Image (tube, rainbow, N blue to C red; front, side):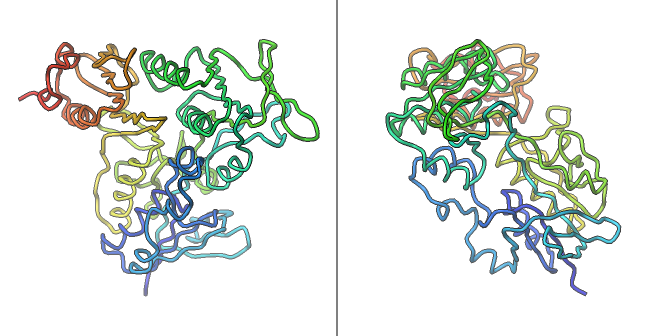
Length: 408
């Protein structure tokens, strides 16, 4: 009798996991359940090319419909799962329909972290996570109007860059002493503050938002903890995301900062795997468990999940990497910088828009932030993956070609 694999979440992970199942030999039914009306699409462009109107939803689709058709992959869109019954190996949808599974994949992703502040429900205040969010913001973009971004992380800065390029007056409010404080060294924070300032964006750090005020149901200003306020025609809140683990938790799966999986993407239920933003996995390179919010992580982990469903063991041990596009800058990040004890700068970060910040720990490279430096990015991935000891002076010396930084 044909078996059924159900994938919950029409995400980046799902877009990889479904066809990978066929490649691994799964012959049964494959059903992907998604709560949006769209097939799986790329999310990073939402704060950039989509927000600016350069791309539409059809430009974002991760896979062509023809590929899903060829692999006999079915979709239920605009559909939510209410609960998972592991004992009966079934799902109940919010419309009451019950679906049975033999194998289940949780690719539920993450959602925006919301804030509970006075006036947060006023019109003109938005979060940015999905296509609907972007379309709502687009309707309110107008040159010369005032936009306030709450949060100086990557999503906040990317949104600020897009809105500024579209002619808005943009202010970024960050509660920490510097932008990107959670994820990068002061050198990168200083660089991005300089660049945004050069572009005309106002960045205020060490500022806590206390609420929003307006009239006729629409936001007009953002109030701050220090008693000041800023005029606002549009507000975008970007203060992080949280993993969607509620279904897993209610079903009795182990959850701790994400759905806990092993190196093969398996949960504590042998018939359930998890991949992507929602999964907490062991990382051999860094010697700790990680929950990563990135497209490469979702894609590679989904391959391991597909193999596990098909009774194979393909360990997920890819090096974490990320990227961010702002103005003419492409930041490519190799590895994770937490725990570094030395930062080495390659290039002139104060006067150009191209440099690298290398993060070292006990003489070994653990991460690199590469701004418009694709060659150094590729070399950094190799150096981090091999655990090679590096000479800080050579890393900083631009007379040495990037390829020559790799020990012989």
